Length: 350
Image (cartoon, rainbow, N blue to C red; front, side, top):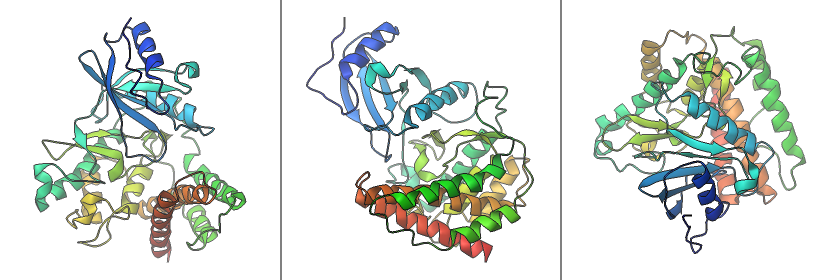
């Protein structure tokens, strides 16, 4: 049986156990070599490695699992498998297991993506020119439109979420999440404005439900990989918040972090956004409208909901950092983003 070098330890991944499982699954023979953690996220563990002549990326929940970690990874597996024959750019799913006894958590393997994360750096030649960076912005819209065009029932995801009442559930759900932060040790409370005012505005101005579809749930520059040789999205990544709901909320999320004026950075302070060469918010929405038959007349509402939802989620990481359950530097950075999102929401609401 192939052996795995025991000197190459990766936190959260028993390489010998992984190798044994791959043998049982009939995956390429050989020892696991060159294992290396992949950074980028703040929670889940990802490791790139080789076995035989094939490269893999393993993904599992964080070292200290949260209550929903295994469920989220299981859902990611199912979603990636369902996207296999679609036009949506994604990392190809290879195999996975819900047996927590193997690695201590649910995990899966996928193909590596030949690309880069433009949130942190811009290595591709086309990214050196303003025109190339502008096309990279539009590429975000193109990938999102491809996702929204997928019929979730056709790819076997009809029970992947609860689209009925999706919009109605959003405000109570995220208000409940926010209220729980008050009991976090050391958390001083939020710095952003009146959460209740935004919640009331969202309830009073909620649009009618649109046609349901696959919702990524956290769509922005850091959650895509750009291709190295062309200004296109090579893969949408980090699907842990995906569900079946209103795809316009993904558009709202992109709108929520996008520069309001030419020359500004996005609210997440990405390397791509810092160049000041992104297309305008209006141009992005026009691009989406040209590729979709979905009605964007209520996009401000979806933008405010996105600010509300993601701002509360990011503030949660700050709250956990106050209790020592997350890095304080990360917590402070994400709180700054949360404040920016709520500021934008309050400007839209007036």
